[in-house]
Length: 292
Length: 279
Image 1 (cartoon, each protein chain N blue to C red):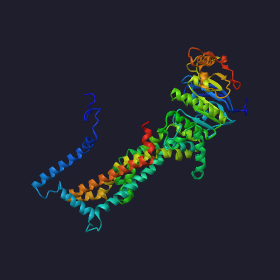
Image 2 (image 1 turned 30 degrees about the horizontal axis):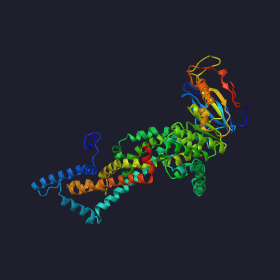
Image 3 (image 1 turned 120 degrees about the vertical axis):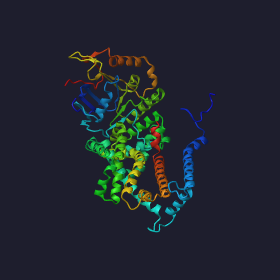
Image 4 (image 1 turned 90 degrees about the horizontal axis):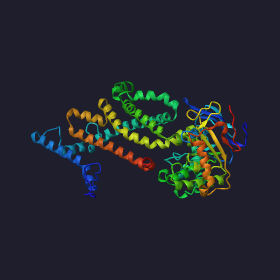
């Protein structure tokens, strides 16, 4: 599996320890191009920590993370990120927020000369999230859902190799949330993106993902038989979902959909049900485990 | 009674517009009445009283200082003093704004710089500036530099620490995001965080102006040949209350004007600043 180029993101034997607490333990993960990966897990399982590690914002305690075979030491423009909030800059208008990704990498002078072209390109991205008429407003003048759409456009203009999303729709009301879910699926398809989507909402994860990763601290260690409390979270299941085109929200009503959610809930979210690590349901074809 | 408006008392008072204006003016009117009454009483006893000059004497003082050339110096005293004082004040506060801003910005973002400077700035901030005024006069001279240094030392630690806190309040996400948008570390500081903190700088400068005036007048009172503070302490020897009152009102007006203009500057130039905080 070493550095296999078909994998965009490759994580091996990752372990993260804060002070004396093991947060993540023995995470092995390979993500292929074009995948819509959703990551779910109970609160406190280290989802956000994993995201920070992938971004290069924090260092691993051991193990390594490779983006196209290279290690990231700082957050860089090869990764895009959309947060639940604080993705936008309050002092810039909507259009300026989107233009930023084209301006920051070049000198002030160059970005001044190219301003017209950048403006045009940013406008195109703003149109793709259907917000063209709000170009000159400030972020605080938009609703939560609109702000998140701007944040997505802001990240997309960089054409990142992988787009990380950290509970991007967590603060939205159910109706807006569903609209946003459909929008992100459309954008994913149009732009052939690779998305790594963190959420605590199982329904959202199952609806969006082509691959679902369940990270949880609720399992039984295969050798020492310990359970729950001081174990670092691991990937306890890894599902491949077939998706033929952007699905409509109606599939949320089907029985299979509900059953899968129930299954994941049992595997990852119930502290009383701990599977032994050797029984983990890692059915995805990219899934692998090494014990280092 | 449910729909009756409460005019003045209690947590839910909602005074009508006219009452608001009257209420705001009331303390001023009271002060004026009190002054005029006291002045009248004193003048009834002694027509040459200097302590509480009459309105006509104050008007005369305005004329003499503001609109007549002084016989000895050949200048319009009030304008001459104002110019001298404002020059010191502006140079002092501007240099502490610039230096406080650069320090606070870098300390807030760079842990290394923060470690290097935080303890030292805290140390400086705790020195009462007036206590080292003699040292400043001895080392920087009793001319302009000594006075400017007093204003600078008195205001820059506060500005530095306030900018530092404002930078610290910017969410981590905001900075990581900039890096993913291709910003270099320098660009994060000077192209992403810097413009977000500028309005806060104007606001701290606005609040620091009060102490800047204090240091200015203290320095001018002790050693100077011109300036608003100098004049006040000079004419005190002749008990010229009329001139003192004119000067104090003028200084108050200047301070109010500066405060007002800086506040307007923020709301015109940075419309997002006050609004985003209410969210």
